[in-house]
Length: 230
Image 1 (cartoon, rainbow, N blue to C red):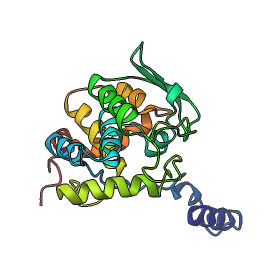
Image 2: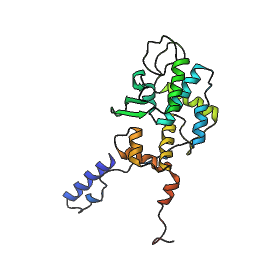
Image 3: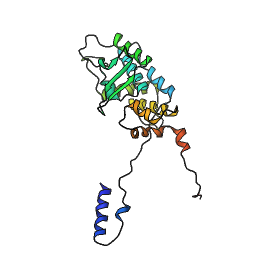
């Protein structure tokens, strides 16, 4: 809005012959502020996933959701919206329509993730529930979890139990697990297009946000002081 107003003012001044060529000095678009990505190291992620109580139905469910987020990078809303029919056990694949982009995403069902989900479905999911969502509330009414509050409490309890803190001191939700997966893939040399495809982005530009979390390679991009020495 500010750029547009300044551009109109400069155009007016040029037309009134008060100034010349000043409109070109106004940027065509504003720069976007990029915030640091909060991530956890692999050991912290494993501790977070293992923190729920394995003897409680809610703990079995929470572990399955945390592991699913950590291994696939699914968005929180797609985790709570996951349906029983989205899992192809024979082909070991998860196929769903993403809530944010509306596009179909197909991911491999990793062995440990499949075992955790199967454990929940067979031993901890409420019996007789008329819902086809995979993950349900542990108390009646046995309906799907709320995309915001439901997963917020799951993540908040896990962070509280482990005392984990994201690298930049912010973030205590499922999105930290998504960012941690992307950053770990970058550190292992995975190409950005591959990361973008795994995370279900519309384009590669969305994956560039996670470059800030790869501190080692970001340091290699720093410029020296050649030509601008004090």
